[in-house]
Image 1 (spheres, rainbow, N blue to C red):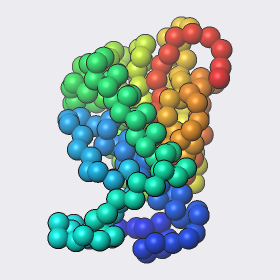
Image 2 (image 1 turned 180 degrees about the horizontal axis):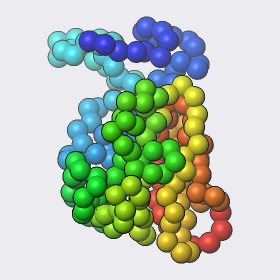
Image 3 (image 1 turned 180 degrees about the vertical axis):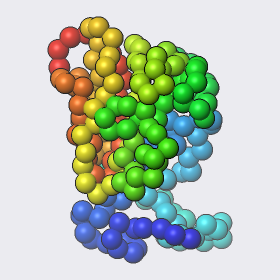
Length: 221
């Protein structure tokens, strides 16, 4: 198996490594709960209950299988984040997202579009960019008006992933009149309240992911 444990193996007292591990867990929760199909989450996953890499602990009545339910700040933050993602998933399912997917983005209709940091559709060459900074547009408008352009509709959703160790600026596609992109969830700032984007841009922090939706209304914050 190939893995990366954020700079240290096993338990560590380094606060930066522990925070990065929790953030990576939040990134995985977004990937899982906002994917097609039924999400399967094992008890303790949100609390980094890794079983120290042991995938067969049915006979281990010790620290390998025990779950630490101590209600500290970090644990509450993780469980609250999981609840937030679960509520978002429920709202997307109720609005008929996650229905169709096509591999050829130049043909219509489609409900999923992969977009670059400039808000345009990804090309084959973009998939070979090692920085792994991409966005996924879940659209009920179904299709791009142009083969190389992205059209948005009310209530469309974008999920942005940054697997790189440096931040980048995401430029979102234009929205319909009197609508704005609104940041709903940010794994780098899990307690950040939703905010509207003033100029359709957002700084995606290192090794983080975030969820945005087109919303009606005026003002920011």
